[in-house]
Image 1 (cartoon, helix red, strand yellow):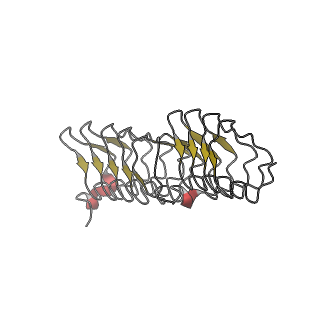
Image 2: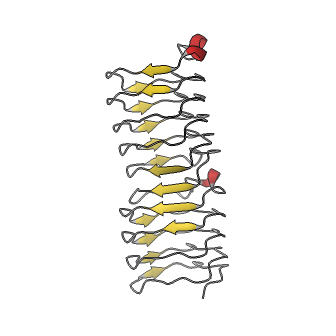
Length: 243
């Protein structure tokens, strides 16, 4: 189905949603190519499928805290959007939510995220990830697999307790990683095949490094392991030049 404003969509430049609105409906602003200004209410909880897809002139939007869900293609093809702040309340980002947001270079993933599609940022301009979830379960799939070749920097904030399984898998151009003192565990294949990673600081708080964590990090020539480490998996440094 089409937007209720589909036949005047090219005329729309500004939209304000009333305070009683808790959901931006399916395709509400779809293909409003000239839409530049959007005001979202504090009561908002959900941004549905295609809600702002192809709003190619939209260069700023404030997503209020309280939003828990961003649907498929919600901000797809928002070519002019240079940055966006995801609220602390956010729990789900579906497939292609920020696809082709080509000016978007950095994103902070909020702590409460429970579902992050591996295609959420496909074909975007992201090269920097700031990661805040404490103990996220990837289910074995990197949440950034489809932009892995673009990522150059990953920053884990000081509330993160575990680096997720396959988190940075095959980020061939990853050059910089920051791991805080809050981290206890580096899960399997967390940095597998990060071939441009020259060095990494593993804080003394890390007690467990699981199998294949640095598998194939061929540019990694040295690494200092914490003295208090309790367990290390096999193939941790397979095909590396460390030691």
